[in-house]
Length: 459
Image (cartoon, rainbow, N blue to C red; front, top):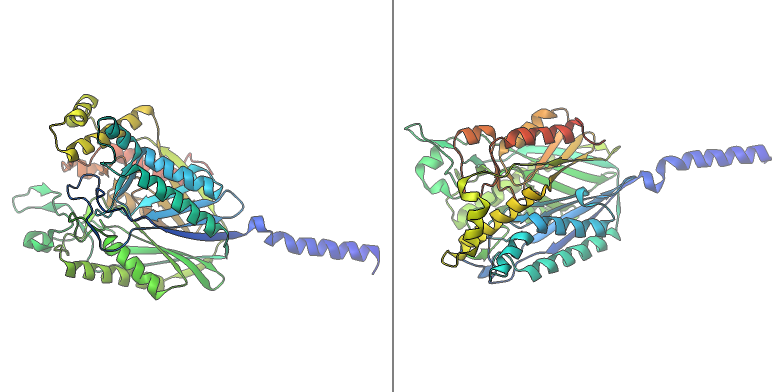
């Protein structure tokens, strides 16, 4: 073989190698950790009965996805809410462990109520008035971050190539129903809560506005499935408030699917469900918990069966900053909240709620925005919205980008509490867990346009 032939052969070899260089390939790693709160810990931030037993454990499940750019992290935790400084701290730790930036960590809570609310800023406010660890155990929270970081780092040692992304959806039978009901006298109320099915009016009232589908996005190495992320929009409670720690029917359904597919990592996240509960179909009994578990698992199974695989050719990350206006309600002034935090004659639960409201007010005043991130795979997108966003925002996102399989997770940064639509504000929706003002819909819509449609957003 002469010199020219050798050069030609070498060039051909180099040309053949270029398309499959490691930096151009996609890979995934997974992680999990136990995040069960200790006994004697408060649930939902303000429930009077603290944890007395463990019905089933609380867990965090997530994955790191990488390619030619910085990795992204998606993590779903069996907690009620992660707010303010706690949300920053948790994401920062996961970002450092994954070698990426904080905004590229999509951290979401499932929002079960027999689980904790963590808010480092509110905890500091409470500590300063003699109520240390009343909202959440601060040392326990730190230990959870450390435990999760170690699990993420261990997962990175076992990266799996990703060649395809899968999408599938299926209707879920008899779980979701909207809180909004109209009484015979024309009065509009949002009082159909999670356990309203024992009341004949709430049980017989129509489902109302919901998203009936569970959507599953999956990642594959050739024909081998690696991970499935399923998202469905409903409050995830069958019953709560008895001090019985539980991931409830959504966590139980996730475990059922994991048993059915032991080699496919199962992750579940709650969609935008501030105004959606199981209230039409759930009477708060143990039997209802079992039925809800089975129905959700059945929907997840059907979505998996419906899955279509397409080659994964792109992974774009987009993020935009969202500023939501703090609610100017008379009960939420800085003076009143501060007075309530310091008022030793009030119930501890009321002082905790005031501290949460004050922490959120201070955060807005500081100008710190909320990250609204989006992972764009071309054929599919994952977007994370803050707080207890109403289901209308999930439907808005899907209509905004109908040519793509849009998976919307709720309960990201949770300081806003409920985020009603304009229509819900017009119907006089109000709740003590509401910290954002009317007019939020316009801001939420603009954020969705930026990350889903790249309207003035980063590429």
